[in-house]
Image (tube, rainbow, N blue to C red; front, side):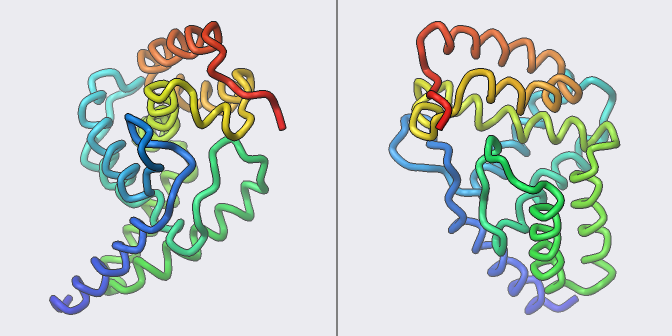
Length: 196
């Protein structure tokens, strides 16, 4: 691979910074972007590795998390609580992943595409742990901001729990216990929205 190909890949990845999510950063001044989200959950996985449900190859988890939202450069971000056609959404993101990662030579691109597919399937211990990080981080940010996004987008307590519980609990049960307790506190403080 040439240095030029590496630079082209880097500049293409930079577009992930333009994908604005529905979650505000701690302090609430602005919404986070998908690049920030990927960076944060990769570091979160490093910190929470001892709490994974099963032993994981943490370098594989980190690579998954850095890669998992690359397809959003083309497909955009959809809030996790949105009611969407999951198969169609996955196909749109895969198309974006193939295009972006395709700027690399085939011998480098193919394993990255397979790693993205492994994350999507959530069948391996690494993918389940990665999913737990991906689901928990936005919740923790909403909690740090007094539930601002949940109220703004009309997201109920029940909708949050039903959407995130399974994935967090399967990949990192101790994290789910922590999140569950914070969500119950937030419910008592009326930090959730009304379904719209």
